[in-house]
Length: 165
Image 1: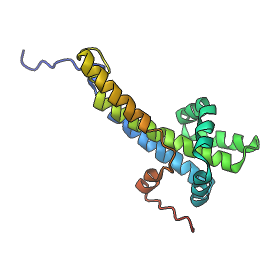
Image 2 (image 1 turned 90 degrees about the horizontal axis):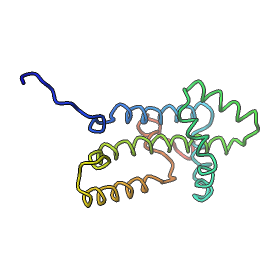
Image 3 (image 1 turned 90 degrees about the vertical axis):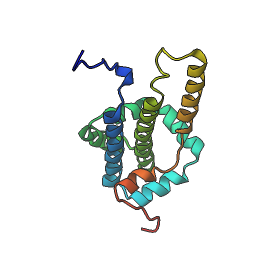
Image 4 (image 1 turned 45 degrees about the vertical axis):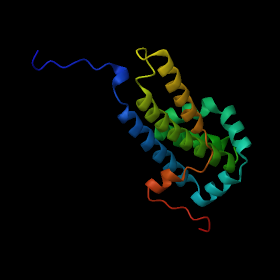
């Protein structure tokens, strides 16, 4: 038929708007960090943490970080004030916000991987092809669990943090 479009199934659609949201959200979280703390101090504080301590902090607070990422910017500001009232240390709050930034970056990158592997994440391909692709997908998701300072967000915002500032 002329003018008839084939149906696009949801799993075939790219998630570009979600990817863009996650990236912008990482920037919004970076702005929140900058509003509350010196970025050079936050970076020094974060980089002084042992990776095992950051993994433990994230593991213990995964629900809280998830909920924080899902909050609006106004809710996040209120939550930071609440943490300060509850006498959470400044270094703890800084690390928490940086972990949320890293979390938003991971969301973006997982969504990009989802788009790349979307045809293997639903039935339709051969078993061996799917198994190989999902192994590759899982290895790439695993590689996202890095605890380096999220400098790419600040660079994209035009904020260059000099440790001596």
